[in-house]
Each structure stands twice: as structure tokens, then as C-alpha cells.
Length: 112
Image 1 (cartoon, rainbow, N blue to C red):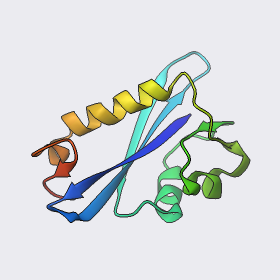
Image 2 (image 1 turned 120 degrees about the vertical axis):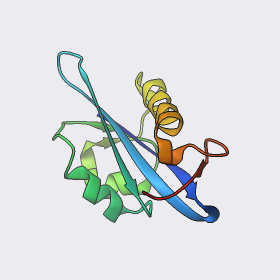
Image 3 (image 1 turned 90 degrees about the vertical axis):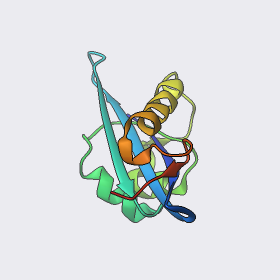
């Protein structure tokens, strides 16, 4: 499984929202996409999202401290061949989800 996070603004730059994105890959190579919207980037938000995810042996992430706190030894901070795929998913989420579309890719209309 590959995880990443991104942020957007809600109505003004003082109100950030974080979007946790995940791609889970089965042994047969099928992709499953997940995302979770939260008001903070901390471990509690990631813990809430973890309950919606499948149980996996390895989680590839960037250097966010929350991944180690939640996944422990399962979290790997190495870049993998899936890094471009998760970044592409992040871009598509910004482009396609209507409440994230506004003036630019980093500015949203509302939290819901």
C-alpha cells in the first residue's frame, strides 16, 4: 500500500484541510483507491482513516511522522515505483472532486 497526504485551503489560506490518499495493490496487481478528508495532519486523523483501509504487510510513505506512529514497522519511507502513481492520484483528486476545484489546485470552496 502506498500513502500520501496533501492539503488544500478552505475559503481562505488560514483554514487548511488535509487529504490522505492511499493506493492498495492486491497480489494480482489490482489497484484500490482510498481517500480521507481531515482538518489536521496529525496521527489522530491518520488513525481514523486507517480503520477504512485493508490490512497490509508494508506501507510505503513519505517522511510524515504520523505514519510511523500509526503503522510502526510496517511503514517504509523509501521511494517506490508507485510514487508517481500516488502523486498522479493526488493531482486527479484535486482536478475532479468538485469541492476542491476553485481558483487553483490549492484552493477549495468548502470543507464539505
